[in-house]
Image (cartoon, rainbow, N blue to C red):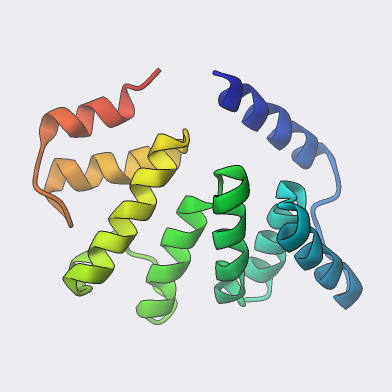
Length: 149
């Protein structure tokens, strides 16, 4: 419950504040803040900046750092990885086209996100368990991922 309240508070602050990066100095500053202190606001600024400038792949090292520090960014990592592997195409079903080691790694990332209260990770995993994508089909597990309170 504490994590949910923190996330709601965080996204409220971020949505009310300035999220756009306007120059190279701000990019550098945001990178430093993510790497040195795990600043989630700076991370969101970077994700917005890289998405707007079609440099989405640049977010990977910062996603790894923020996942380690603040237990967010798992879905960003997952989606970015797939887009890199499949020429800017984001299709969750493409996980089936990866080798087993890569599939297991991405499922691991989604599980970590789900354990750290990422609704999006739980939603993706639920769909995977529902359809047997990258994991053994398991309707009970699929339902339990979405119905976490």
